[in-house]
Structure formats: C-alpha cells, structure tokens
Image 1 (cartoon, helix red, strand yellow):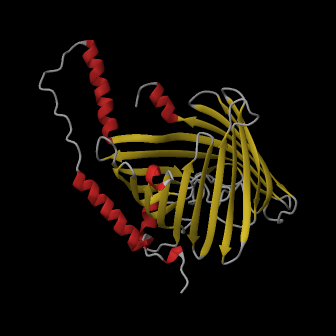
Image 2 (tube, helix red, strand yellow):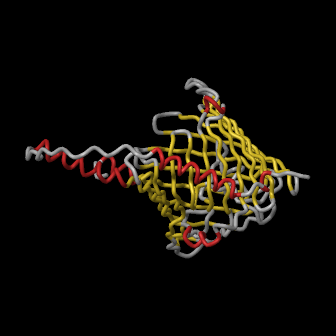
Image 3 (cartoon, rainbow, N blue to C red):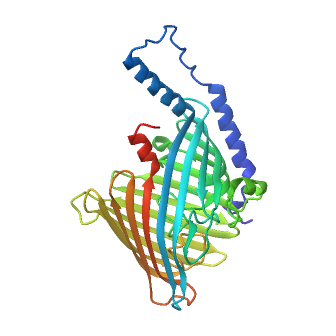
Length: 372
C-alpha cells in the first residue's frame, strides 16, 4: 500500500489545533493589575503620562504591523518584442492585529491591500498601459493563538510560510492561502527552530477578497510540512514538502550571513524539486551587499522550468537580475529591479523587466511623530 503525506486527513491537524487551544484556556491568563485608587494629579507631567497611557491602552488592543504606500514604474517586454506592460502602478498595504490579551497570545490578524488577484498587490493608475484600478480588499484574516511559548496555531486566511526560500522558487510574495497551520518552536528538544504543518486551499486566483474565499474553506488542495534551523549566526536553512493540486514538490534553501568585511553580506541558494506527476528541477542564487548606510545592492541568477504561482519576475527560463535599495530615511526608499532573460525564452514570455519603486513607510512616520 502506497503512502503520501497529502493523504493525511486534515481532521488530524484540526484535532491538534483544538487540543492546543484548550490547553491554553485551561492554563488561563494572569489577571490584569487593578487600577490605583489614588486620584490622578493635574500636573503637566501627569497629563503627559496620561496621554502616553491612552496610547498604551490603544496598543493593548490594537497594533499595526505594516502601513505603507508605494508607487512604481513597471515595464515588461516579451521575447517577441511586444510590450506586456509599460505603466505606473500603486500599492497600499495595512497589516494590523486585534489582541484579546495584553501579551498578544490570542489575536486576530488582517491584511487590507490593493490588487486584483491573490498574486499581486498592485493596481494600475491608468498612466500607460492598462486602465485605472481601484481594488482594495481584505486579503488576509486569521485567528492566531500562542497558548504556550513553543506552539503557535493559525486558522483562516493565512500568509504562505516560505522558510528561507523566496518567491523565485515557491509562491509569489503577495499570495495567501485559506486553512490551518500549527508551528512548533522547541529547538532544545526537537533540534529544529521551527516545525510547521499547514493544511489549506491555494486556488481562486482571481478572488482577492478573503471573505469570499472562505466559502471554499473546507475544499483544501494544499499541504505543507516545513522545518527551519538557524545553525549559527552565519548559516540558516529550511526544507519543506509541498502538495498542491496533485503536484508534489520539495523546496530547500540555505542562507549565509558573512562578516561585514567580506565582498558580500548575504548569500542565498534555494531550489525546488518536483517529483510528481512530472520531474523538474530549478534553482535561484542571490547575493547582497550593503555598501553604505543608505545603499544596498544585490543580484542573482535564477533557472526556473515550471509555470507556477511563483514571483512574476521569475517566469520560465534562465534569468539574471539586479536589485538596488536607496533608503533615504526610515520612511522613504527608492527601489530598482532589473531582470533579463538569457538564452531561449518562449516568444510570449517576458525577456526584459524593469521596476522603479518609491516606497513610503507610513507607520514609521506615525512612530516618529508619536501619533501612534
């Protein structure tokens, strides 16, 4: 009798989820400190403390993880010299979390963002190719529970767990799934820093709204079993087995962080191995160097042989690519990306791609001005 990981019933994962949640409830929460019976003073210092206390009260229940606005010049030319894109686009992302307890052990996380599909968070402005797009959807919404330090449980519309891999060999950074995940972090007993099991649905690409996608929550076609380990300060790696709609794939990645005086700061090698229903192999190698306090340069080579939901910069074929990040301040950055196909590229597949992105980190401004 043959055996495959994807034959394991998701009911097993759900059982683990409920056991963990029940364990957390039984342990209970420490009671909140009772307010002081003394009347507050009317001094200026006390008023300032009162303002800070109000902010703390907000953070007790609600916190932003990301709040950003971006715009980019976007150019794509296919191998047959047709212009697939030559326009301006914009992006807005707000990731936030509602906390049920002061420590944030139990929370609901959400992502409100632009984009017309689950594989992009960019809208067209109408300048250049394409017409104006006003898409804004709740793209992620999930319950997050950390009943004990070693265990985390997530249920709902989730992000993809990449490990040390990137969108070059796995899934687009904008993608997300609907399902359940259990993560165990117990390196002293289990060696790995993280062991992750995910049962979910990865489909309905043209439906970015997570609420609409919940109607197919029980129809799951994606399973992932992942391990990750930070061996020391310099070396970290991850490996996973992924099943998606009848396709079985292994992903592996290793990342090196080198001493500052070396010619590069970071080197990443990642690959995928598809072994069912067909056999396929591809990889990506990337290096990065921070040249100054505000300038970081990077680049790499990718050899991808499958048409999948990976990052759209990495269509099938051999490609070299270069990245540059000019960080003017904690709020503002200028990012350039250039990608060029090498050798044979199918006529209707991108050969040349250029992105010039201006990024504004709104959250940093709120923190600096002490408004949040």
